[in-house]
Length: 542
Image (cartoon, rainbow, N blue to C red; front, side, top):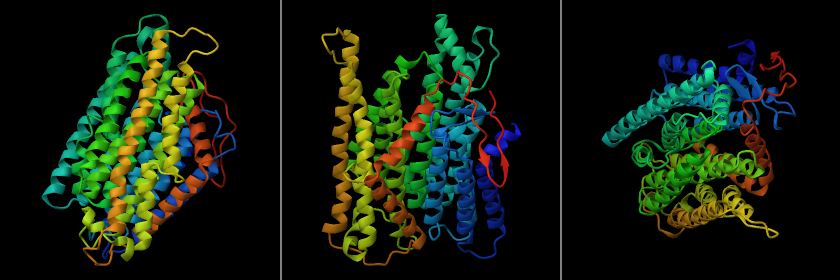
């Protein structure tokens, strides 16, 4: 790792240093307070400032620059800002919900998760990518263990721990195949995604592409499907969400899903030659995931289990964008599909984090919101929080004019664009295989829309319980103002994103173009990224 890479990762280093100090200081603290939360928020603000100072007008273009094992492009910068925002929301939400004497450990673990998300955003080398993903997983074990509640919580944490280790092992096995394939054709083996892609492109052109490339894809997808809570690696989610606190469930619903999507994007387009298999497998997984998630959510009376199945369904929606991107990676339609997936990940994360923060605020002491009965009547007793929860539910359901509507619109128009492009025009002859593929994309869009309609039913059940059922418990919420502030910020973001959807779509499109840039080509030599007041990033590696 060169000095250039260290300077590029200055925001991540700040977050890691603050996390380390929070761990150490929290262990020796003599009394409990929210000072570690404020300290963490200050560290996140400093990291965000340094990240902003790295930006140049050319960042959100097609520019792609490499710095050792990292790639500096629009996708990296967008995901890093999102990670810092997610961290700030959950640090705020934990100000009153952490167990006594454990705030330092929980806040430090959240910061570690944020650092891992930021590293995943730019990692284009197998070892770095794996370490970044583990930097998310390991602190998550700590958070879930500290937030467990009773025997059910112990079971949920144990289940998540062992399944997460299994998924990491499967993914690492897939990485070993990719490393071996990078040495095909007499080339030196490499862990860099660009070298792996170049080797596979050469092998495909020579007709010597090994079947192990398909095995590597299946193993990598299986490992990352766990983080996306995609079928058939979804079954841990309901038990884990139910067995932990609302804040911890929210973090689990957001952070691994964002990191898993970005890692899958980076890896998927570094494996040419497996597009046909990837298209078939990911399409099937997307259909099964969103359908099973929505149907199972309809039967839930526990709010967190309902939102767990909702999270599973949203993982299926995300995969639709990847299916569109796989149709023709060099086509503008692919860029729009990937941009839709990235936009939807942000849209879902904001609404989901806000919903769990609102549930955390409504907790009565150590008693969390469990069932719809716990939400009954809060439309009258807590009108502000009820309004926020309603906004989040409407956004997750895709009801206009909230930002969730634009996310679903972008996701579902992608398959329709592919279908329309497959239709014959001006008497042109189109192959039957192309027509069949176009009809498959049409079916994907139709099934997605039907799933969104099903999802609206259980989201509206939550709204109906708040406004149309009499209150059962009039106890005052004790989740703290931090959780309320986090929910309020997310609510404002949901409304503002719905009013100005073009801003988010613009950056998502830039990130999509950068992710699809041919990794085998030398990166564009960009002007140095000025880190004002600190140093200057020299010319990137070629």
